[in-house]
Length: 77
Image (spheres, rainbow, N blue to C red):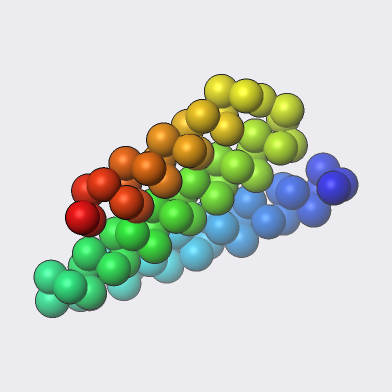
């Protein structure tokens, strides 16, 4: 993939992450907050994956995997 495309995708993921944060503030129900937490965690790991591919970084790939495993699967369970 082209580097500019990856940076554009990362900017989109960052904007969605910010939107999820605002929705998280407006949420009053626990189930909705938990769902937003999982989605925000997935967006964070997607950003780490995009950066891992753009920078060819194995460390960022491990960060993305650990974020998915811990914040998107284990904590909500």
